[in-house]
Amino acid sequence: MSTPEKVVIKNKSFENMYKLRLLKIHNACVSQGLDWIPNEIRWLDWHGYPSEFLPDSFQAKKLICLELRRNHIIQLWKGKKLLYKLKFINLSHSHKLIRTPDFTGIPNLERLILEDCSSLIEIHHSAGHLKRLQLLNLRNCTNSGSLPKRIFLERLEVTILSGCSKVDEFPEILGTMDCPSLTMLFLQATSLKELPPSIFEHLPSLVFLNLSHSKNLTSLPSSIGRLKCLKILNLCFCSKLDKLPVGLMQLQSLQELYIEENVISKRPCSFELLEGFKFSTLGERIERHLKLGNLKIGLTLIGWNLVITLRECIGKASLWLHLYQNL
Image 1 (cartoon, helix red, strand yellow):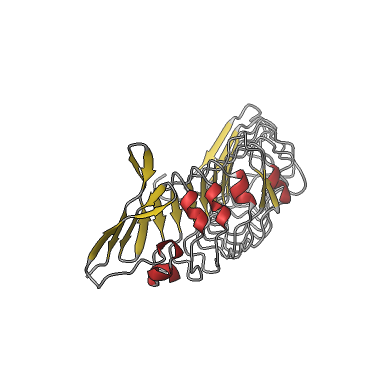
Image 2: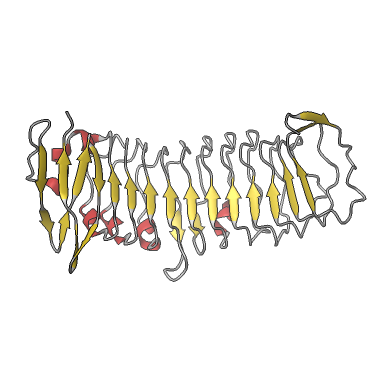
């Protein structure tokens, strides 16, 4: 249907459909939910699910995908359900959702998407033990102030917490260096003041770290240098961050560093890595080499937007320092 239309679905409409495997309802206005959903179902995709809970009888042990976007659910179900085959949950834009279910009975979950669940307050601690989880998306869950205190990262690849404005503490990371680990971490617009050391100890494969608009972030530890695979670091609009750690120079793979509109970018001469370097008058172009150890540091500053670019040279990695002050 091109436009939403009211569809009448009786409580027991699917009661005798024992072989139903896929149920997909999009762009339809349904006044009430169901008393019964076939337990043989594999894929449930219902945009705008009208009830506050799934039916008490819901025991779809063969369910693989549960996609209930823009629904009226307060909580999926109470207690614990054993759904060992469930791999994908998407409840994005569920503005009435208050708490997540107990994930203990869903050990094989790979993707958990709770984007824009603006009323979500409680994330069950068992979410931190989903060892097969690859994607965790809590973007713009503005009322979620607490995350699981510990998370295990055996397969997690992408974590999105951007816009979680009440999150002021990142979980302790537990995992092994031999397991695939996080490659992308989105932490922009949170209330984080600092990052725990475990981030740098257990994320050797991290490629992308976004901390922009973290207005309470005051410092980064020197141990950030352990992130040997980090290529992009975004610190734009971190208004309380006034210096960068020396450990930054140990980031062998770093290609881009953004520090627009923060204390560092407004007073670049206070940037410790540029100690002794004097900025020229407005409009002048300065090219200079700053050698630290076996590395040459190259910084490109355009309108106080700092970008570090790594270039491979014969025999060693080097960076060139280019400073532009725009007219």
